[in-house]
Image 1 (cartoon, rainbow, N blue to C red):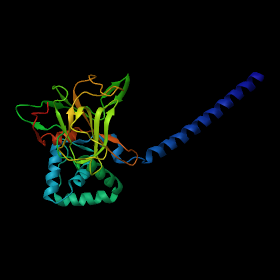
Image 2: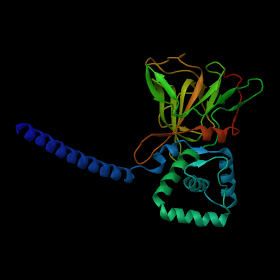
Image 3: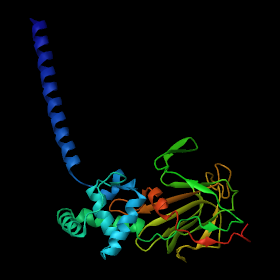
Image 4: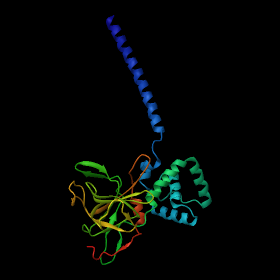
Length: 296
């Protein structure tokens, strides 16, 4: 009799525990749904936006379309990126005629006005002020050989700790101090000096809010101070391999290259990185001419 009572008690406890667990699961499932449904992040804070998957042909077409129709190129880019889930590559729908475009963009603004505004502001920060590729053209007597690829999100290690690469590396076979670097935009120096990872770096804030970060420099072209103004195309330094060391002046931990980073401010982030690769492709042929002689 006692055994039966004990069994009933065990079964009753198990049933109560099962009901409690089911209620807990349902409650958390509902909370999860609320969390998922609640849009705490702007579209610009998603990985889809940050990858900047836009082809150079699209950027050129949008620029021409905007100029011909007296439109804001950044606004046109915003519309097509939103319509195509932030991917504008080969095979995607091409530009509408102006009448269709105006109707569609008006409808999108009405339904997603806040999203449209935040995305437009972010694209202005990235594309609105760029003028020149960061490595200038040189004379045939002093050629500059470089290459770059899309290394966004690749793994990097320092002191056995892994971090994701949040920029694009422009590589050269030349020695440190040979390749000049110019500012891609006009702007104001916001950071300059030594960083453990970035080495000698300089960060320039452009008019539309983009932060352009140049790292691993060999040296600066002159003494820069926070607050100094910089012109687009102005020489800011020379490519090197500084960084990955607490001691200022550490070099030789990796090959000579320029790490370029682009950051924007959003509702939840003071510095949110975006992929510079599309920007560099777009600017690849837009270079200032630089006389290498005397700068060795």
